Image 1 (spheres, rainbow, N blue to C red):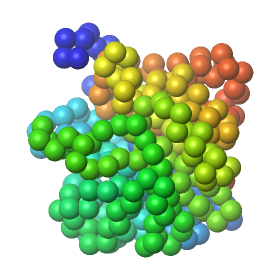
Image 2 (image 1 turned 60 degrees about the vertical axis):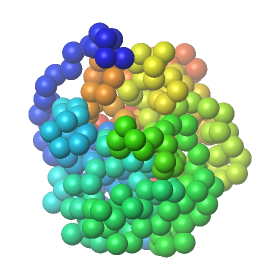
Image 3 (image 1 turned 180 degrees about the vertical axis):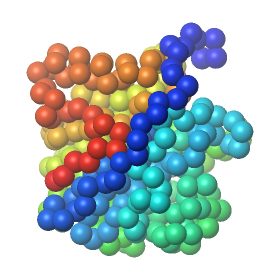
Image 4 (image 1 turned 90 degrees about the vertical axis):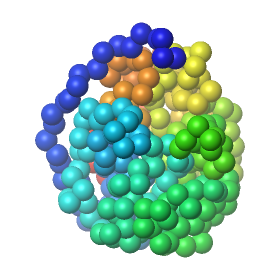
Length: 283
C-alpha cells in the first residue's frame, strides 16, 4: 500500500462554516459536518455520529491532516445528548473531540463491545456497549447496533480486540441508518429484513482504492449503491470522503463515481447523493 501512487489532494480547502438548520417542526434534521460526522437533531435529543474535530486522524503528530475544517464549528453545535461511536479508528474515535464533548455536554456514548475503556479515557462517564443487534437501554430514543465488515485497532498490538458496527436510530416515526465504516457484504439485506423500512441511510463512499487492499474494509461507490438497494433503496446520503486523504483516489472521485454508479442503476440523485459540507437535510 505504501508503494501505491496517490492522486494529489489540495493541502487545504477553505470553506466558510455553516449553522445547522433548526429543528422547528421537522421530525429530524441531519447536517453533514465532514467525514463520518453528522449532527442529527431530533425532538428526543441531538446526536453526533463518529465526532471528529481534530486536525489529524491519528496519534499526536501523526496521521493524515484534515483538508476541510469541520463544516459546523464546535461552538455552534446545539446541546448534544447522544454520541454514536462506530469503532475505535482514529478518524472515527477522536479522544480530543470526545473530551470536548464530555466537558461541554456530558453526553451518553453508545459504542460496540470493547470500546468503553478507551472512551472513558476522554472523560466520558456514561458509556453503553452493545453487540450486533442489541438495543440500547440508556438512550432517550431507540438505537440498535447493526453489523459491519471492518476491523479495529489503535496500535499494532490491539487489532480486533474491540467490535465495530453501524446504528439504526428511531427519531419519532423515522428510522435513520448510519452504516459506520464497512466493506460491502450481504448483511445490508438482513438489516432491512430485521429492523424494517428505513427513511434515510448514511453510507460510506470513500477511502476505497486500491481495491486489492481496501475491498475488505471499505465500500467503493458502486458497492454503496448495491448496499442502498439491499436496504430497500431508501433516500441515501454518501459520507466518508473529501476530508482526510486515507487512500489513493482523488478528493472528488468518490462523488463522481457515486453519480456514475447511480446512473448505471437508474437511481435518481434524489434517492442517493451527497450533502454539501455543512448542508442540512430536513426529514
